[in-house]
Image 1 (cartoon, rainbow, N blue to C red):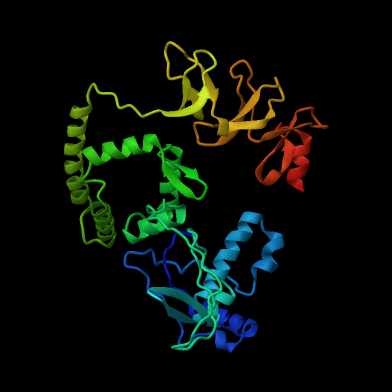
Image 2 (image 1 turned 90 degrees about the vertical axis):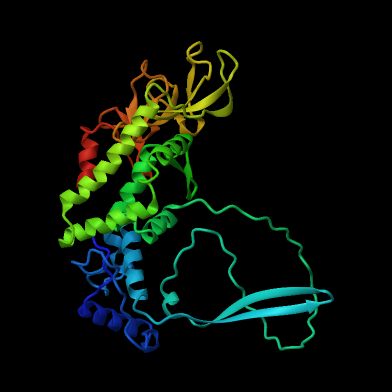
Length: 394
């Protein structure tokens, strides 16, 4: 359901209140019902995304759901209930401790009433030091020193965006809609402008080059205020306050002028993406190989091209399991449509390719190869194999 509404029906609210009271007690309901104000321009035709039956708990539904469905339903169910529960009450304490010419500070808290946190706590993307519970102290009290642990801290650069923090930044700046956040991230990932590094999103060399070019020639278009302003204009077109042809015409005239300027400036020029050097030595000429990006993903190439045309699979794309057809190394690749598959590094001499990693076993039904797919599920890679039909029925 494509909605960013925060509105829920009174029927759903009453059902949730009944569940909270019967499960946790009346004190877990707020003194006044909590209503959330939907942002202007939000798609409010539907209610907020919520469970249709709050009494169908995640534990009850778990056996009927896949692992991904269960996680999603659990998240929606818990957030919905928590939004209607009483707040968490904490006692926060800050202590200044004077010792000779030095001043030590300590912060802590204790939970007076857990409220909605009995059910749900928001996850954190960055590691944070949580406050600790402090013992009772009084002004003027003499404390006994047990130990001092010296720590040196350096100023850290801002953390890289993660998917949740990037979506939060898009939302705060009025860029896009909830229904477009996922496509925005998937597009810049598929085009190799960014890559995942654990939880963080890291810009690639290609991404930085493209960003520099866009900022140089289309600086007015990529401004946050311009993008957010265009979103507001689209909302006004939807409500009939603006004429869509005039709005598009104004945008196109400005964009066309910038495009022609960029086209004239870049005619005959070739933009080079800097190579990332590795420690892998080319076994043909001895140079250090560099990382390149192709239609099948990353690979290693000799910087001596065209004199030396040696290439190798990128180490992170290699699979331990050998090719079941010829024994060469298997490599993780990406198709033109963005789908991952595993192919033989000896291509085109060997044409083996499969959507999963071969297990080394052979199918008893048809003699084809057994592969490991999503969540470790093993099945025959032959789509016409009778064993596939049996598993589909199961």
